[in-house]
Image 1 (spheres, helix red, strand yellow):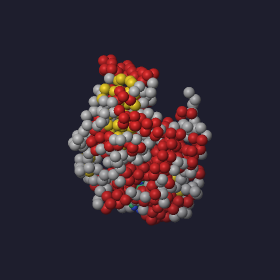
Image 2 (cartoon, rainbow, N blue to C red; image 1 turned 90 degrees about the vertical axis):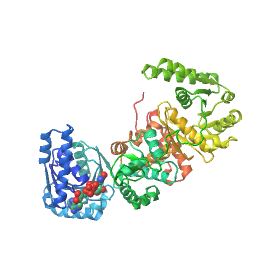
Image 3 (cartoon, helix red, strand yellow; image 1 turned 135 degrees about the horizontal axis):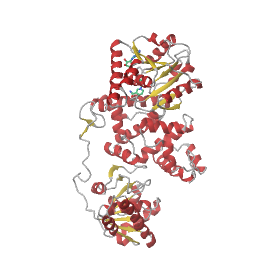
Image 4 (cartoon, rainbow, N blue to C red; image 1 turned 180 degrees about the horizontal axis):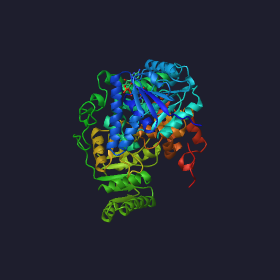
Length: 594
Ligand SMILES: NC(=O)c1ccc[n+]([C@@H]2O[C@H](COP(=O)([O-])OP(=O)(O)OC[C@H]3O[C@@H](n4cnc5c(N)ncnc54)[C@H](O)[C@@H]3O)[C@@H](O)[C@H]2O)c1
């Protein structure tokens, strides 16, 4: 029989505590809330009243229900009032000594069966539990802000937590309409541990001038569908808060990836704390304002960067696969004449057929007129010779992901294409400079990394190795905007921006699963519900393909030699066993055979 939880206590009625009280009271549970003094108690009560009034104003709660809810909450300043509660959640400030004192006092007040839960974001539940006389009855109950809205609750077990206590608390969270996940006692738990490691890496990229803040943020929003880019999110969280969390994680793990990027400390010391101070990575209209205003780091819109630009009218595409076909379609749709170089006539016709099929779909959906379809198709000319690319202003190579094959293509282009033309590769993992080195004109060579399907995905990573001429980069940035894509600039390093940030995170999640820290379902749920990501890491790995993911992780590891980038053995084993994800029907999960 699951425990009843007729009455619970909440200690600390600040940002989180007030929200947690509301969650319990909404669920029909009597709540005794304890604050440190009358002023804080009044403030906490007012927070609760205002939040529930907003729910009534938005027709999300009936006025009667609000009255009943408030009637279930008693706010006091006396810890003794918690004598007969079944569960206490503490949400006092994030200081171990303070929390330990609260638990020590509660140990004397509460009955022997009362469960103690901490809402700490980063302190050790184990350390807190041993400061009570009932370690087996202590868990973490980590709510997310704002607690009444966010579905995720991380229920944290220690090595001595009674399994029944864990089950009862998890069950309670479900009854309160939350999506609880269970995990062990590690700094950052699931969501913050994975999130902050990724955020810290993004800050490091910014710090080393690998990519600009707008480009880092746009890359993750357009490339991965994240609700916010990493630096905008850091500003929202607060750089001081992020620093504390990373620092705690580092002290526990000694993992270099958790060591706060040095620039964080400098920004905090300079008072650049993020939105709350009006300046962090971005500048805001006022302290606390979400409105970003332009500052000295704001880049000009694509095409308006001034300086020299080359003229691009005729575009060549080399290759006949998925990417080549999509890229040719995108350019032709935007009014460029496109010459597609195929190895055989049949393959060339295949590209035209592929584009026709895609355009036809758009016509059926009413998104494209028949005349626009015909005009677009008329702009695409397949050929089997490199000579026909001679007068192209820009050539995009999209052949097999094999360096020798690509270098042969660049050698051939170098022989025939007119001087001053831009030569681009759409490689997703090879060094662009290797393509540049295969020509006598390395300054004209650049990377244009499109995402699949090219006709749909908005992001293009523009990769400039040290050899690329500045006017080539600015021309390609402007052309990318002209074809309706979002250009981001970055250096020529493995993974560019998106893969370099995404795959180490996926690898961290795999290592977490491998360590039996939490289940795949719970890790996926934490990242979806806690961080608003479109998919959890294992759902995504299964879609991408585990073999493809392993290859990307290996290339990142070989480039950076960061120990944390070494692919988790679990991924290697799944690939060896032929479990490659959705495409083979089995990966981290099993799928129904089609
Ligand atoms: N803010 C977040 O996004 C977030 C999310 C999840 C968890 N947390 C964690 O929740 C806890 C609370 O954070 P917060 O943001 O609500 O802080 P807060 O400063 O808004 O609230 C803390 C409250 O505790 C009260 N308090 C202090 N000492 C007390 C005592 N001895 N007895 C009773 N009340 C006392 C304070 O008066 C204050 O109202 C922290 O451990 C934090 O790490 C915060």
